[in-house]
Image (cartoon, rainbow, N blue to C red; front, side, top):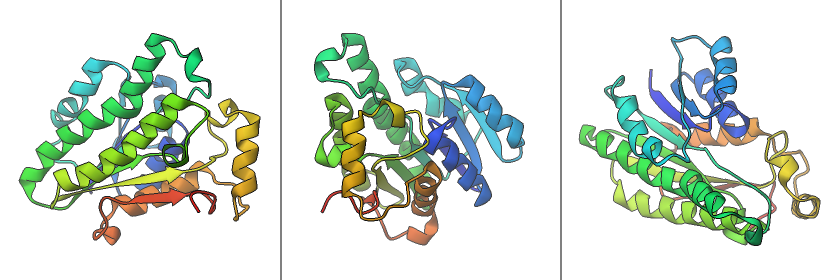
Length: 241
């Protein structure tokens, strides 16, 4: 049974990814700062397929120590899904210094350390491994939340660079969702921005976390073993065109 780390695992896309991955036969190591959300996952799935960690990826010590903590219990891990993220939906002028540091840590710095620490341990096995980063169309076309857009643009750049850095054994790809319904973020997106997404979508079935999770699990697996350094849009055809 291949093992898969999923961050931001308690809600939204992360929770859906945990569920889809377990259905696909993975053992999932799920991390989130939402202890109650992780308890809900534990109540649904047993220890044979799920291990949970309460982890706040805004904390530098957690960012730098999390992968080492995982490898104290596991000799090898097949894949990593860097999903944890923050979105405030507000002007750059409204950010405090603390919030700037927080979003940079969660949305970008955590990916830097988790990815390199995972790859460093797994490349020695000289066997196929996989990382999927969660970007956003905001990283490609901009965002009303400048810090969110900037971090997601950086995730895209990091994905492409690490595809080179970690080759030939660790593939690195990104999923770039547009407007995702039924998430905590949805209600914080300004109404005019939600209307813009809806206007540009050429497929009208609302994108749900489960739909994004299906793409993540497909991309992490061996069926797409010839793809690396790619950004896969899940956007109902909205961006970019």
